[in-house]
Amino acid sequence: MGGLRLVFTSAAVLAATMLGGCTRKVESNLSSQPEINISQAALSAYNNRYLGRHLPLAFAVSPDGEAFAYYYCDVARCIGGIQPSQEAISRALNDCNNEGHGQCVLFAVGTSAPRKYRLID
Image (cartoon, rainbow, N blue to C red; front, side, top):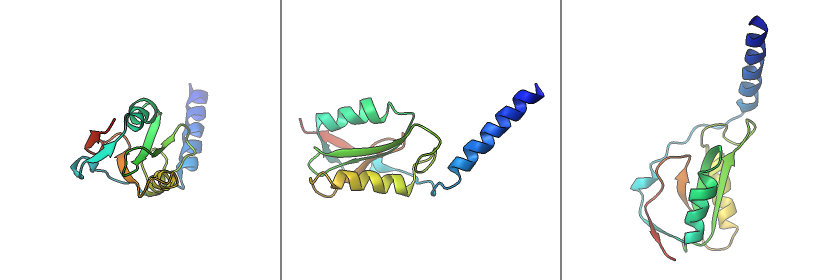
């Protein structure tokens, strides 16, 4: 039993070391933000891909509701670790902005309630 405990402890130390460079946790209350437009494709990606990930971190949508981008964590070595971080949010927003549909906004952070939306499809 002692050997098993040592292996578990070593794994926990390794995971903590890998997450050591995480940025600060970001709190989200997007559900109180103004309503945005979102396409069926973007909403489907949010519900079926983003929320289906092990640790969803940030989901951004363009002003026309057509473009979107998201960041998630499937392993211990990821931006923000197990908590949404400013870096994860920035990357999701930047990737969405790069789609050329205007200045994107956050739709969701982590698994918190998403922003209010109007389906445009």
